Image: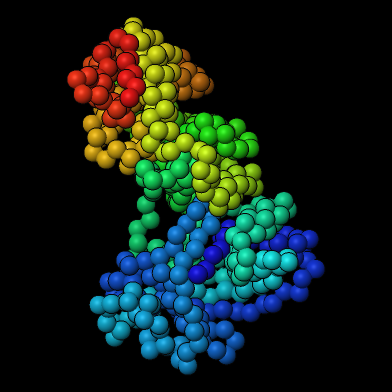
Amino acid sequence: MEIELKLSLHPRHIARIRRHPLLSKIAPEQRPLLSIYFDTPKFDLMQRGIALRVRRVDDQWIQTLKAEAQSVGALSSRPEWEMAISDGSHPDFSVLPPTALDLLNGIKPKHIAPAFSTEFNRTTWQIDNSETQAEVALDIGKIYAGEMSRDICEVEIELKSGAPAFLFDIATQLLEQVPLHIEPRSKAERGYILSGAVIASPIRAIQPAIHKDQTAGEAWNAILQAALVQLVANVPGFLENAHDTEYLHQLRIALRRLRSGVLLAKSLDLDTPDWDRSLRESLHTFNPARDWDVFLQETLSGVLTIMGESLWNTPVKDTTLAQMRDIAAHARQRAQALLLKPLFTRLVLDIGRSLLTTHADSQLRDTKRWAEVILEKHWHTLRKRCHGFAKLDSTERHRARIAAKKMRYTAEAFAPLYGKRANHFITALAAFQDELGHENDIHIGMQLLRKLPRKSVTHSFELGRLSGALELEATQHASSSNSVWRRLARSKLFWRREPVGFSNRSEPGGNVRIFSI
């Protein structure tokens, strides 16, 4: 089983790694490595989560087959079979054990051919203490697929023996002098993307693997892990394709889900150092970029349709759009810069390390009871924020939106405990959150327009017209939110234990009744 941490760095920081006090006194080994990755023309191995490569090490060919990886943040582990073969032109299936051959069942060896290759120089350092050993590898080179290529510049920290926490210790020490950043993808994954076998896309929220037989601590671990995996998976996409605004959107969702999980830790008396502050600061950095993305791609097009786009003076429109897009681009660059900072990498590593401990203390409450308490608390908060909903102003509706968002993250996290019972409520909650989200987007758009510099009287007049149109749309939209809230308020609360002869539906505008059993 291969267990490793993978982190990237900019080529200008290579010398820092070599000079790091942790490594400088250890004699390194250096060797060039050529790896050829094999698959079928239809990439059947990739679709099964298998990587098959033949690597030339000095004068020897080493064949490696890796099964699909299990990841916890930046840490990944995967079944691996490695053996020497005589010829690197094609894999030798006769040397694979039965468990590995089972993974290839139904795939004809004659259809397997080279798909892409990697060529890089590897420098390794062996680090150990009394109980643990790990290898730090610095890889510099390229991935090749046909006429396409992509640079490799990364550090892999692989566990040879002992506890995985040792990898996080090493990574944290390296971070003190080298700005490493998150790179969860293997070379094989990047090779498949380069070869066109995979079209990289944003990763949406992942359902936590929780069940009623867990302790509350184990369930909390699963909730945090699912959010961390989503966060880490979207980092490379946003760094490489910031124009695809969905990557940033999913990064923010993952950060908010992590925050929700961190806040849940308080109910279990679990220690989460300063994570909430760091997560809030990260969100604060991402928010301007996301605000501009939503405004330019959604809000603005809607209001121009209402106004009649021809009514917007064309020269002013072009100038204003260029100004907006320039501001949006700078906001995205600031968000990208955050992902490259050691503080962000340290946050991911700290959370990932915490997940090595399952918090399975038998004194913690059982998962379902814990879920009921948390869901009830969030529902009370949401109803409080929505009291007299039709008369709420924009600030109060914003607070209601935040409460709905927290309610939704919690409800979706605990949904596996309740099965289909949770679906109706979560659907109604999502609709309510979307309505409030659209209202909030309109108000954010108005704020963005107010902050734009006025370059002329005509420019100022056109921006004022846009703001007026947005304000009108916000007013018209408020009435539809009222009906959506009433529908949610009448929904059956799936976590309530309902005694025979009683109803656990909540009446709009009334008090919530809790029945104890």
